[in-house]
Amino acid sequence: MAAVTTGKKQGYLAQIGVVPQAGGSAILCATMKEVDWEVKSAKLDSTDRNTASTGWESSINGLNSWTATAKFDYFEGDAELTELRLAIFNKTPVSVALYHEINPGSGEPVYTGQAIVTSAKFGGKTSDLQGMDVQLDGNGPLVLGAQ
Image 1 (cartoon, rainbow, N blue to C red):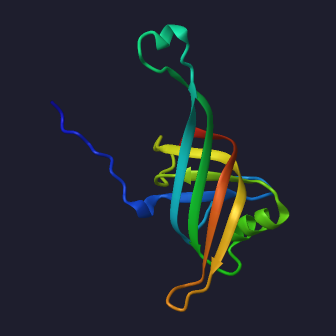
Image 2: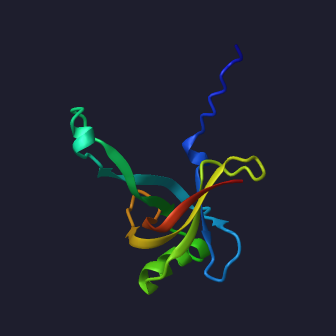
Image 3: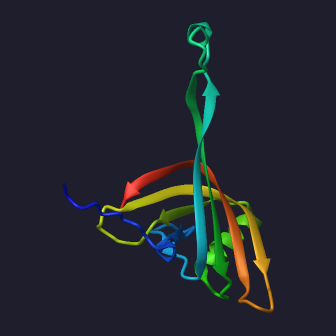
């Protein structure tokens, strides 16, 4: 039996990219500190008289949704942060790319989609760099592709 390759990745390798409003490819957010994304699938009850007679409920998948939360160091003049900041003030969606690790041509996953910025929180703690936390709520599908 061959040895198992775990494929574990350090958290700092994860990245988020923002596609400029003018178009083009996603540009990585260099000042990102953390990113979390979640995909959910609603569960619909499909129990009927036939399945209930077995004593077990039955379910099917409903609609999917996704969210992402990212924390950044605020850097004046950072074009990607500007895109995110303007998106909430102008109520415009943004196109994003989420990566477990940047590795072009590797076939590793990249998740792309359009999101609404539903929250942008700015912080100015005296013990840390100024920060900007952004909540992205999916606006349509999050598409799984390959780098």
